[in-house]
Image 1 (cartoon, rainbow, N blue to C red):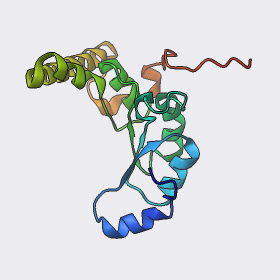
Image 2 (tube, rainbow, N blue to C red):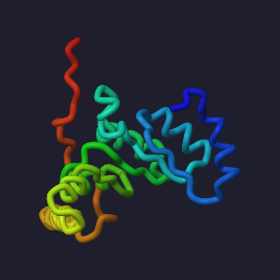
Image 3 (cartoon, helix red, strand yellow):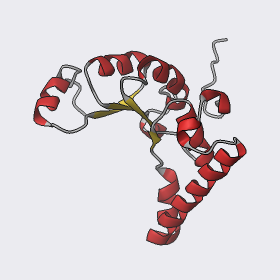
Length: 161
């Protein structure tokens, strides 16, 4: 980790790299707006699975506001907290273009190697499809925030209230 890296370094990266530029690890609306203003192609809301930053903001709870602020300017990905297909559907409904899925495929890998990973992907796909059918939605592009609610299982407790 280099604490001297800043938003200004994106200009250098952009010069060196002609492809799509996506920044992972965005944890607040202000940074998302700044990155959009700087012309990145995408952002990934992430606290890196909470492993290193277990008291950081929950990306899923940032998603609706970030999507309202910059969703028309950049693609938004979501990492952290995706445990099943319904989580994927909910993230897309709230403005994510895609999600990362870390634990599910790792569990599959540990349980059955490549075949386990393939099965984990099948399970996630089945869950996405089932959730969409229950919502009476035929295509991901039809999903809207009003289709789902945000569960509170990952909401930090505010002990100062």
